Image (cartoon, rainbow, N blue to C red; front, side, top):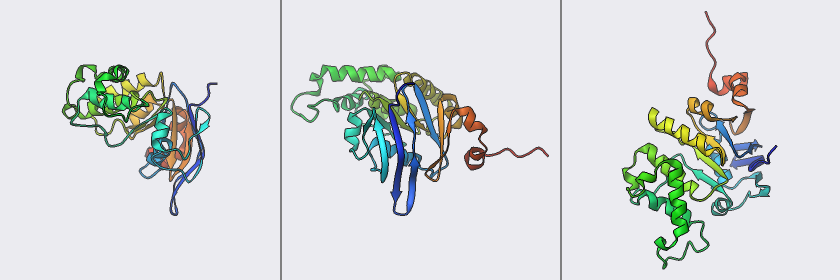
Length: 252
């Protein structure tokens, strides 16, 4: 079996007396969408923030390609191949679609903080930005302002910016939030395509999309893993039904 791109061992995050993430051990593989679901306050976004370095863990380990990255800063973890999107779209609205992606790609240069040289001089950066836009289907919108895109297209652009950094694993926090049915369908197809070359953690409340996409599901409740396994196991789990998915009323 292939080695996990990223795995956690007994990962914990405490805020005072609150255990937001408690003893979580998970694995994430290339060509696999691993969805993490659970009620509000279950610890899903906190887990994502620990993996991306936006939060420091209280205890436990995070291994990326066998290297323990727990305790590294978010920028160093990103440089090692962890890409993240956020619940709230995080793009530069006054810039063009291409400029947004070019900024993301330029972050991978050793010289990314040299401001005298024109950004247009970095041809490799431009090609990476164009590739990322093509990957999400926005290549024809490259010269338009990001502010003119629809909500769904802005979410696509945020993912393109992540792809421009050449990540090994994508941490996607509610990428379908606020979308209509057509935009959701496009996003589902995009994620299905991206899984071929990436490991993926998907936090999402749209259960139809989750069960359509996920190769593996982890259910969190109160910071702990309640159940983890293939979608059919999660559907059949009485504990998951009771805690999260809901149970059907018995026939009268």
